[in-house]
Image 1 (cartoon, rainbow, N blue to C red):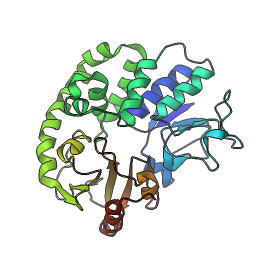
Image 2 (cartoon, helix red, strand yellow):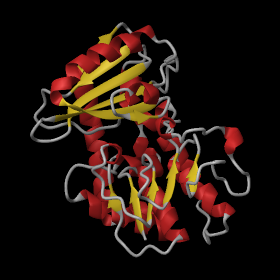
Image 3 (tube, one colour):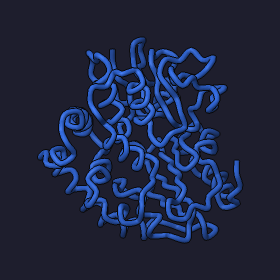
Image 4 (cartoon, helix red, strand yellow):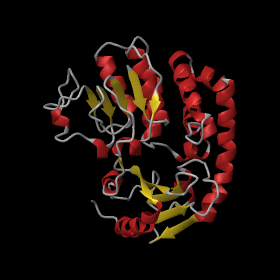
Length: 315
C-alpha cells in the first residue's frame, strides 16, 4: 500500500495521517496535480491518493478542491456515518473543506483508526491551506511556527523529497516545538525568512496592475524563479482583489505555471478561480488555483483571463 499526494504542506499532513491509520509498505509518491490530470503519474491499485485529482487506478481517494468534486457531489449526498458520496463507489472521502488533511482526519477519526490527537496540526493546516491568515501572520510568519514551516516546503530540486519524508516522520512523533528545533527544519525556515525579505523588492519590480484590481507578477524574464511568501502581494497591493503569477516550470522553458489567487485582505473578487482554470487544464478552489501551459499558449490564455478577472463577475 502506498500514499500518493502533493508536495505541499497539506499533502505532507495528509501523509502523516494516512501513515497513522494504514499499514504503508512503500515510499510516498509525490506528484503534482497536472501529472495526474495528464495521465503521467504512475498510479496503481492499492494506492491511497490525497490532495490530488481522482485517478480511477487508485483504491482510496481524498480531496477538497472545487475543481475535483465528483459528479453529483453535494452536501446532501453524504452519509453521516460513512462520510461517503451517495451513489458513487469511491472509497475515501471528498468535501469542499479548508484542507484535504481535514477531510482525511475526519474520515479516519470516524472510523476510530487514529490513536493520536492531531487537532492542533489540522487546525493550522486548515488555516494555511485556506489562506485564512491575518496581516501579521503574512508579514511575520516567523512568529507562527506552523506557518513558517509550511513556507519551508518547496519543490525545487532533488534535496526536497527527502525533506518532505523527514517532515512526515517529525510531525507524526514530535511536538511543533521539537519539529522546529530540528537542524534541517531550522536551516530551511531561516532561509525562508531571508527569501521573504528579498521577495518584497522582487514583487514590486515585476508586478503590473491591470484595471486597478488585478496584480500580475510575470517572472518569465528572470533566470531563476524567485521564492517567497505567496501572500505578500496582497499586503503590497491592497487595492487589488486578485493576483496572477506567471513563471517557467523547467529549465527548458517549454512549460509555464500560472497561479491565480483571490486577495485575502480585499475579498471582492467574485470569480471562481478553480472553475476558471479548469477551462485550461488546471483547477483548484474558488479562491485559488493553478495550471500548467505550453509556453507558446501562455500569452493568449492570459489575454483571455485578464478581462474576466477585471470584469469580476461570477463564472
